[in-house]
Length: 197
Length: 277
Image (cartoon, rainbow over all chains, first blue to last red):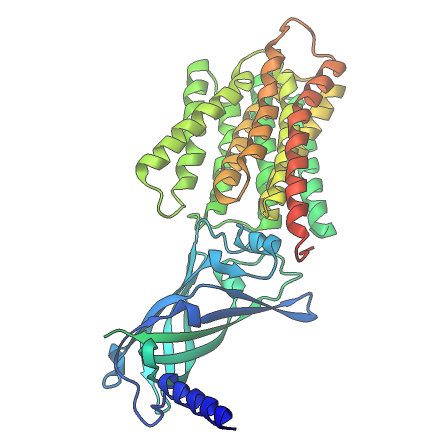
């Protein structure tokens, strides 16, 4: 009984060291570096018109400059190396990286660079910016929902956002296998940023 | 590849090739050679346009450079005069690596120049039998068709169906000319087709080398198959009978088949974990 109480107390104490608890506090302004290990980029495309296939990119890099006092000074830059693509099949990864799809050797990155950032009371960001893939750039508007923020013990101050948007791959010159794969690709990018002191 | 696409990749070069061959036969030797060369490159470009997609101008990606690089082969089959032919051949041998490597990020000027020179030397060596003005041109389309066919297979195993389709179209057109040559030999047509086909194949292989993960061993075997055309210089006085043409093609096929088998084994090994197809 005593040991059980000690263990529970220790776990509760440890959790308070890392659980951000700044819900009432505004998001701190500053430069956030994207933590690739805790950020995710997923893509979804329909296959044969009957199923949804999900794949991921294992690396997400970038920077977010957040200015709570003047959102016009905020900026988001995200870079995803195409060769971090992971579709759970080495063969399919090779095909997706080939000139038939991403042409990774010629266009090694997919990027998003914001041109304007609008904030909201819940910390979510409306981003307007240039999405570049296969050398083609299109302006996109997306909502990046705020997930949370706060001091995270030894991890420092962190904040996270998640954006869910859809692109038409043909707009970027990726129209191969249009009879088997859907034209619209849903993309989810979830970022965890570490505030740089 | 669906049935309609397969029909386009095979059917279009057959139609273009046959029409081009018929028209070329009715012309004088120089015009006939030029038209044969034009036929070969048009068949490639038409397949690229209808199957892969028509490239814009200016080219926005490396694949869009291929019609220009492939199409330049028609110039080599049309130009007259030995000196001009050789000068143009040098330029066309430098072009693929020079322009394609420009599309890759982080490639320094010196690296690009080295690749262009090294690639040009290899291509010129391979093109020598086709550039030489002699009856060995008869052997050209058959050998090039075999190598192009193997290259199409290698492209599939290196994960690019698009490149396979374009290279396959080249193989079909050259193969048709080779078969028609068995029936009605016509040296100028073979020479024109060989010259244009050599430039086109060179560009496609350079693309495969730098933009796909085409393994060096498979690429080397394809080039070895191409190099067997040099043996056509042996016994220059011996007539190019049907048997001799077929043997020349089979000689090229040996290393090409090895390349295809190695590529296939590699491809199927990848498939064992989470099959894609």
